[in-house]
Image (tube, rainbow, N blue to C red):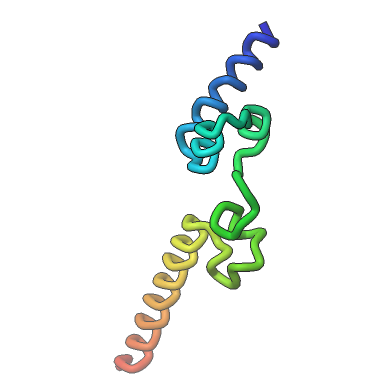
Length: 95
């Protein structure tokens, strides 16, 4: 059972990645077999467009953060801004 499941998942990954990665399609058209590379390597190359931005030297600062982290930081900043606005308004308009 384990071997069959492992082979099933490997075939599934190869089929999925051959659809989505452009350079695999080109190489398969040329007759080059890349099934091992495709199954074991989800990232086609190490350029700044394909690799994880967190580990890339091309990006810096907030560009290395994920979208979820950026949204969380923006929400926190909005909350701080609201708090500052309300505290300043209460300070100016106290009786």
